[in-house]
Amino acid sequence: MLRPQDTLTRERKRLDGLWDFRLDAEAEGRTAGWQDGSLAGATRMPVPASYNDIVPGTQGRDHVGDAWYQTVARVPRGWADQRVVLRFDSATHAATVWLDGQRVVQHEGGYTPFEADVTQLVTPGAEFRVTALVNNELTFQTIPPGIVHDTPHGRRQQYFHDFYNFAGLHRSVWLYATPTTYVDDVTVVTDVDGTTGVVRYDVVAAGPAAGDVSVRVTLRDAAGEVVAQADGASGTLTVPDAHLWAPGDGYLHDAHVTLLDAAGEVVDEYHQSVGIRSVEVRGTQFLVNGEPFYFRGFGKHEDTPVRGKGHDDVFLVHDFALMDWMGANSFRTSHYPYAEEVYDYADRQGIVVIDEVAAVGQNMGLAGGIFGGQNYTTFSPETVDDDAQAAHAQAIRELVARDKNHPSVVLWSIANEPESDTDAARAYFEPLFALARELDPSRPVGFVNVMLAPHGRCQVSELGDVLMLNRYYGWYVHTGDLAAAEDAWRAELEQWAGDGKPIIITEYGADTVAGLHSLTPEPWSEEYQEAYLDMNHRVFDSVDAVVGEHVWNFADFRTSSTSVFRVDGNKKGVFTRDRRPKAAAHLLRRRWTSAG
Ligand code: GCB
Image (cartoon, rainbow, N blue to C red; front, side, top):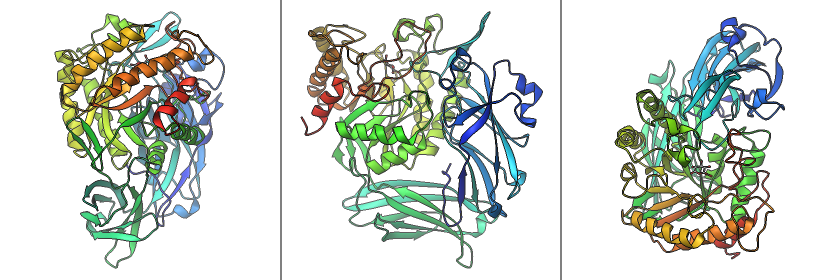
């Protein structure tokens, strides 16, 4: 699904701002038909933002069920004879949308966009009312999973992942116009042949005259010079002496896609940025443009005070600047697809991304059942079942469809720490790996392995092109004993290295209270976080197959408040939640830059 753009033939309008808002824990609105009029008793809620932390009180913070958003907007007068589309960049976790009381789209999955062609329902120059019913309930059939419990005190949402179940309209809402015959999709796959850049493209046109238009693709370099051109819906562009996209060098070409009518007049145009690069796994190496790449960076979250998971360009640029300051070259979108602005910026900044599906918490054994999953079997007809697998497959489809053209994305992660040491897990994941490869043969695929499924027990790792390991030696095991942790960690890692695949350490970290100090490093102190990282780095540096280190986490983040396991959230950040550095930030900067 292409992002809205302003071009010669297209226009867009952001519908962000203060929307009318009403929580509806009893689901009254569905029967009363709140979409048919203005929302009685509404308060105001900013879009984009999570609604949970905006207003004090448990009502919003711990809300389970429906929440209604509504706004009135006007269609620009100049959009007559255009195709008009209403698009939500995300709604967490499911949404139904009405335009003037007419249902136009429904979507499940909290982190990917959805849209509706509303041409027939709007009048250029006139106002219209948009109503979005957003539901945050997680069940065993959703990605990620959860359970809603009916209790004497109301409905309670349980889930098995370690971050807050923020909900709402987390990203922008758009109204946009295209010609009635339009560019519906563009796919670019790049490669490098010696010094020549190779760009294979596919363009899909749609609309009444789609069969009559011809396609032209013109590729320009960053200076605007035409470097290649081709006609036809599919083709290959070759760029001699191409300036490649590379980690640290976010060089982008622009593919100008035009649909032309028989007279050669432009029917529609779309600009697709293109980073020419290759990605390959060879033996234990991860190659970008044929060069071994070592991932330095973080597992992140979309999480900031007050706005929760609401996208914010301020934190986008700030977080990237902090990563740059530390010499980080990559991050993982743990544990869900991030806002599209993040990938665009990563493309431009030359930052490498591991792109993750929101499949997190499919593991009832995790942390000794600390998330309350110990009473359940992970994969069963009553829990994570065929319907969950179908939702997971759909989440993979939507992720690849959305992010396939980003040069920054070099690897798909199709799950974080699922149960992976059982036959049931193997049966569940095998078709999902096959699907990811079929959708995108150009990128490696992996999943993130949990400590409960160590080498020799994990049945899913062999399906991946790379090994991604989350390990907490010296934190959850051998707590406080870094000498014992170091030996145990090295021993396990050497076993994995024997598999002959590149290993990325996708998580290692220690909870740390900023400002807590101890002369002899004690868990929770800044000194312990430093000693813990140093120990891990010694282990990584001693195993050749390790091709990356992503510290958990970039910043402290909010978690569920239903367990004594966390104090004011997860504190494994290298920065506090408001982005102040802990001592570890300086340590990483020394390791990752020449400042060391
Ligand atoms: C993990 C999870 C991550 C948690 C982290 C922790 O393995 O992938 O979501 O936040 O551990 O801090 O326990």
